[in-house]
Structure formats: C-alpha cells, structure tokens
Image 1 (cartoon, rainbow, N blue to C red):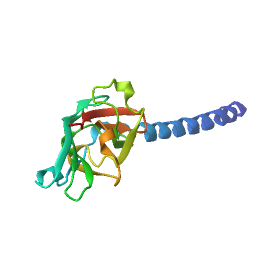
Image 2 (cartoon, rainbow, N blue to C red; image 1 turned 120 degrees about the horizontal axis):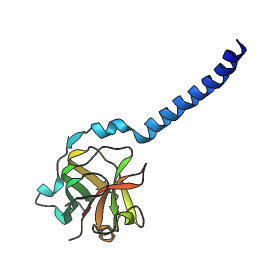
Image 3 (cartoon, rainbow, N blue to C red; image 1 turned 180 degrees about the horizontal axis):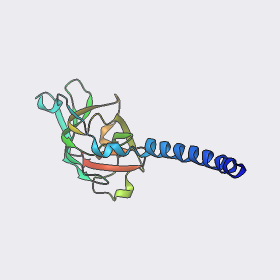
Length: 163
C-alpha cells in the first residue's frame, strides 16, 4: 500500500506537468491553423481612376506558400493604402502585414530586421484586402510588403512595392 501511495505522489504531478506543457505547445504552435483558411473580398481602391498606384509587385514565398499581388496606392484624398490582390497564404498565429525597407529580393534572413511599419493583423488568408497606412507616413522609404509571423519571427511571403 505504501508503494502505491508513493507512486501516486510522483505520477499525479508528472501528469499535471505533461498536460500543462501540452496545452502551452498547442497555444504556441496552433497546429490546427495548418488546415484552416479564411477569405475576404474588400473593395480595391486602385480600380478607381482618381487613385494612383505608386508601386506594385507579385509575392514570392518565404517560409510558406504565398501568392498574389501587393499594391501601394495613393488615394485622391491623399491617403495611402496597401492592398493585396488575389492574395493567398497559409494561416498561422499572429500573422501581420508589414511595409518594410528591405528589397523584395533581400535574403530571407534580412526580413524582420531594419525598418518596418506594422499595418495590422492579416485579415484573411485568401482574397482581396486593403490596409490603411497611417497618415503622415513617408511611403517612399518602404520597398516591399511582407507577410510576417510575429510569434515565430518568420516571413510568409514578400512583394515589391516600388515603382
């Protein structure tokens, strides 16, 4: 009977630790996001004749398959927006859209370093998306749009937005 109680004193804490570690791993990696996607189709502003496309380019994949076009657009009222056209990428935890000062053909390890502007969380993994650039931002210093995973510090895909 004493051996059974001694074993229980070890097994229960070990089981609790295993469950807590498993829960933390699930929270951090969110493996179900490998099998999920979402679609959004926002009104693209470059289709309006009074707006100007400052720069655009096609996405190239980094750590995850990513496709579509990124466009940096100045609207007639002076605002700047980044839009993703026919966009597709993988889902993931804490994925954001960045304007970055790195060229699209920079080495993969260069992204995440240097100057960038976080435009917010990725709205969907597929479709057409529009992101406002904060007023007063000098967009001429940014050279590409980067889809960035904050949780793991990796780029999903990058597209040039220089003229």
